[in-house]
Image (tube, rainbow, N blue to C red):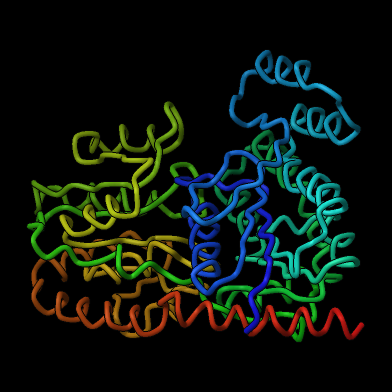
Length: 415
């Protein structure tokens, strides 16, 4: 394939928060290693990138760096040369919305109006009005990891409080934009068959416009680290505390239920706990404060070493468009328990113990089974590592990306 100049757009790319920053780092590095010139055009917070990747900072107001109204007002007032989009961003945030996708799309469109030397533009899930304008001038590939309608659905189910539900309705108001924009996008990539089905159903997108390409994994970083001794009663999970979609409540309740039979049991959560939030209160209610710890801001290697020192990985999600924690754990050869939902079964194959979601008893029983017959489940985990190496390595994934990039460019120029 000829070497291309590629722009990757990302409305926010926090390197340690969720999968967005990880995806941006990995896909830009993979395309660069294939000889392409890659610019990542990102709003704040900005990603950590490989050395050869050029970062173009496209700052918005970045109002979510604080939740203080005074600080947000100060940021807005200090912004020089304000445009209409800045006023929209401030007032939408003030009234409880999340406007970053829309405002980034407008800023990206303005940037590309004067920097249109790219062969293709890849947008990481802003699904914004700006993308419809961009795809008229440049070949555009939209990445939709999963429709955020699922996050909205599970958050509404997590509380019956009127004020909470009202706040969630306001926060997810960007979904109106997504539902209008997605059906008009000509080329979409999604990382799982399950996400494809959900995009078709929730966003009314033509199935023919969507290509499934799994996310890749750095299999040379997520390794077993066999020299590290496992703590036989240490469990590990990755979850954003207080995000209903991740199902952390059920893992915490399972730890509490097993504490009598396994007094040394502990749980490490790769994520940040909100002080005074729902998860913090639940841990206090269950009386397991001394058994649960949180770590955030870890590098990939540090996460891999935490897997190496743990005995069981748990993914208790209620939904996953593509579960990075699933393939990370499997790549590290740790026995895995995961919920039998959305994309997870197609990722794990026969190499994890699958359980129904929201089922504390099944989770507790599975933990007990693995701890009582560890050598058996460790052999399954070793085979699981090979499954990841064969199917989720970046060389294979990048070749699939190059194919859809080539088709997107050809189809654009034919039009």
